Image (cartoon, rainbow, N blue to C red; front, top):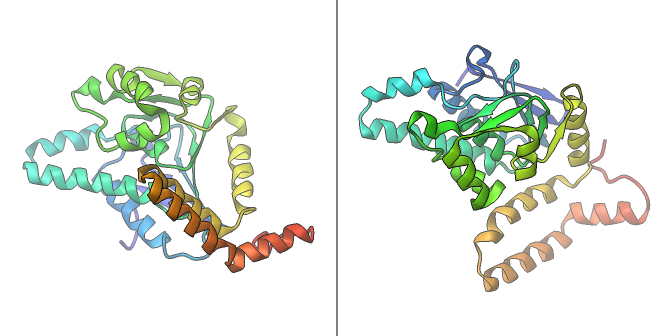
Length: 261
């Protein structure tokens, strides 16, 4: 794609900011936004200079979920066409969740329906106090299907049952209590909190962070024998890496490792 119409992205040093930019509909996503996010994350995955990605929304909302006008238009689609659109949504969520660099959700406002999925797929979600959340799909006769694996990972089945079935509106404090977000800060301190987390991530070994993400995705689905072998191989390999040797030498000699600028 030569240019994007529903998202913006900008590089600030080692950090890429990805901004949902349909503020007139509270950054609700449609087919265009889904495919543009897939395209962008597909390009970013090959950027060796990138260290962290921050996702946020333009204006007062983070993401209001699926654009209802777009959802209504698919009533004329065949089942196969609807399935293609739904698989694209699933691919978009996976592209963000499985991205090999750390991702931060800067939750600047409402995250509703599928928008909560775009919270759950980030590694670390930091929300402004004004943010609200809701799995409101059941209120319009659908379900939070594609986002469910990521939300279940975040909050567990007990909370997911309550939130999915009730469709209730959640305050930022309730979202924090449930584990949907990692931090809640006063509205005017959101940028400072995100910047602080970015700096924390940039102080760690870039390759180690990528392996951490792979570890977190892989280990939960393994048997005891599988995870014993896998985790032993991971640490044995990393101990011999140039990054680990640099990190240990920097620590022992009380200096900053070479990945800290």
